[in-house]
Structure formats: C-alpha cells, structure tokens
Image: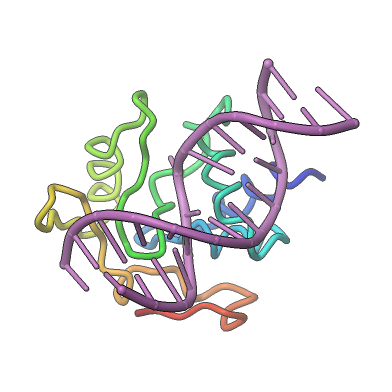
Length: 116
DNA sequence: AAGGTGACTAACA
DNA sequence: ATGTTAGCCACCT
C-alpha cells in the first residue's frame, strides 16, 4: 500500500457536506508532515474524478487548486452541490468556514489539529 | 540516484 | 488581514 493509495482512501472517506485539509489527510495517510505531498499527489492523480477531490482545501479554508482542468470555480460549484457554503472574500479567493464544515468526526481526531 | 517541483504550513513581520 | 520564509515530503525526471 503506497502513500498515494492511502491518500486516495482518506479523501474518499470525507463525508458529504464536509471538507478536510491537506495536512489532516497527510496525517490520516501516515505522514503527518506531508501536507505538501498530498497536494502534489492530487495534482498528478490520473483518475482524480473518481474521488471527492473538491472536499480538500488548505488549512486556512481557501480553495488552493491551480490545476487548469480542475479550477477553483469548478471546485466551488461541486462544494455547493455538496451543501457547503463557499464564500468569496476580498481577493476573489473562494473560502469555506472551517469551524463549520471541517471534517472532525474521524478516528484520529485531536492529534494535532486545531480549528481556528 | 540526486535534484527539482509544488492543490502545504506554521511562524513572523 | 496580507506578504514572506523556511521547513517538509512524496513524485517525477
């Protein structure tokens, strides 16, 4: 079982109506400090559309995709379809309120996760 | 096999 | 709140 496979598994487990951070998923996949790697993996994943990639955002609640095929506009639309409220603050960046939509009900909760 | 590349982060200024 | 910086890490040459 590779790290990449574990990441796919973790992402697949994020409940509808909730989001998870890269760091959170890195932890679930067995590499607590591999947040950046998670982003890289999702970016290069072949069959990305088979998993709920839209539910993965950064620790500040912003949608941080740069992939041209999966732009923030699309992610925002998918999240809204999930029932999540997506805001558009100052600089046009889409944002989700983590205090409200962050996935907290998972096995390893509490390890080092802090919801600001 | 060594070096480059980011859908990342926490810590500061 | 906004901008920078230095670690971090699995992948891909």
